[in-house]
Length: 284
Image (tube, rainbow, N blue to C red):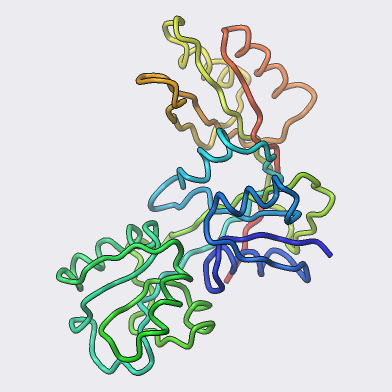
């Protein structure tokens, strides 16, 4: 049976998107994003599902940096999930929002609800957990103490928590992208129709080429290639040294992608392909 590693425990958005995207595969929880990716690298599981970007808070930098610097795993699919954050409390808690003294959640979830916390819970202490599911699990063990978690409806169901306030995220169009990583793409059998295709490139600029980024972008522009994202990250080799991650809205093919790579490499840049993959949209 195919095995899938996800950021756990039960009740995380990663578990939710894994359940929605895949059928009967065995699903294994990991405490951290690097552990998920290491599990595929070490052949402990066949597939890993990890968050890569949120519409409100941007890139999950831990995922991106670990993919670039630590593991050699191709991205074989992207799954997009709408995100709904709720304020969860123990069922024995009888107070109101103003009575809560602490809030626990993943740092991305906290950031997605910043305005709500600022306006409705300005005096509550913020505590960061390794995942939204872990925060919900923590609150489930606290009986009637004035402590809440920010997590999804699945977490409330998994840990028997009460939803004190629904949809507390600051913006309605809150979505998260997840990468599906595997060494064997034949094992991937997602349940939904694909929405489109992308190719993600990692480009490292030479040190002594003035206007290098402009020339790189021109290589895409004159070919009329649509870029959905460009982001810089430090190479970790010294101050001022960066690589660029570029998402191209089309699959790798025999012409455009190879030709643009050839042109960019001719400028002295180093180019790696993180993946060329289908994109799927999930619905709650």
